[in-house]
Amino acid sequence: MKRFIGLIALLFLVTACNQNGLGAWHATKNFFATPVNAVKSLFTNESYQNKKSRTGYNTDLPEEISYCAGSDGAPITGAALNELEKLSDQVLAVSCKCRPWGNCPTEVCPCERQCPNDFKIFERSEHQPIQNLTRIENGLAFRNVTTPSNYELTQGYCWGHANINSQFNRLAFFQPAKTPPHNIQSNDPVEQQKAIDYYKSLVDRINNNEVVEIPGFNNLFQFSSHPALQSYIGDKVAKTWASKAMSWQGLGTALSTKQQHQHTYELLFEDVKSRIDMNLQPTIVFTARSSAFYTHATLVSHYETKSDGKIKICLRENNYSENDNRQCKHSMHIDPVKGLMYGSMEVGGAVIAHNENADTLAQAESLKQKCLNDRDCGQNK
Image (tube, rainbow, N blue to C red; front, side):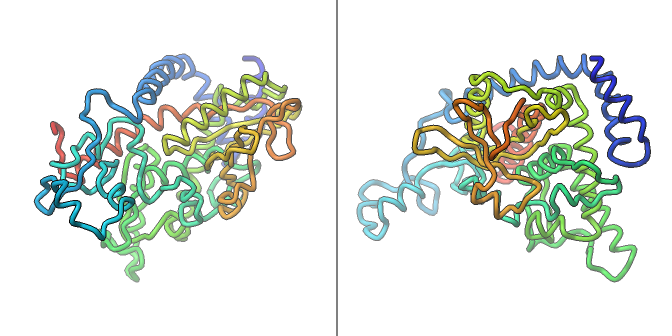
């Protein structure tokens, strides 16, 4: 606790509208909220584990439907299927199964299958395989080292960058063909300001873990490139960094510079792997060994299995190009002697970000409701 309080005091020595002042304010706020947050975390983590344990199967639901339907939604008979010689087995296997976010009639694929009440709700087809999220169009248009914010950048807003990027990837549905209520390209300053305010409200909702549809833009890169919106998104990155990093876990990890037990790193890798398998790209927070306060946070993009059966986790590094991330140029592995390694750097403490479980639960519920509404399933179906 003394080290925590001492860090806050150090940050307050520089109290302008910059990163130190922003961090000190949130550190103080989080310090007094710690007892309440600790209780919330206990319930959140239990709920996360419960939903995780049932992801992938539901014993109370009927067996997976394995037949095709005609235009009326009724099953096509086996005899009729045998006559469709042009349909290969591979095509049938893809077209005849119920999947999350599917477009089958609900008479064939029930709402519970298309809009599951577990983490399969994150299985959006445009994100399959999950490495698709590392395409440049699915990333923020600015890197962590160049965040365009009203808060002066002195050390990097890596945790905020990872968090905001993840929220957009999970919750934003871009609709370029849909006309927005206001035209951001208008020559009329009043109309343009209405459009800017409208899009800012969508950013606020995403940052609150709500699903939103974003008309008039193709993707996140284009959206976050717009000069009228980029600084606002940058401010969200900065404030999110302060909220997450200036916490007991964030500062505790910053002080965790010793090599951890090998089993600790192995458990971390198992947790990361399970989240990737559930179509999540979690944020990992780590510290360089023997270097207090050299702390970094970044998304994990995917994992790869090495020839010896061990896995390495590929990082979606927010200081470097998404093209690098797609090729797993930045990764972590567990060395049998040196412990956890980030490239050639020895890592001390490393954890899944403390906000991951709470965010994932809230996002899953919001996605499920959108899915139900889109398929006209209603609350009671």
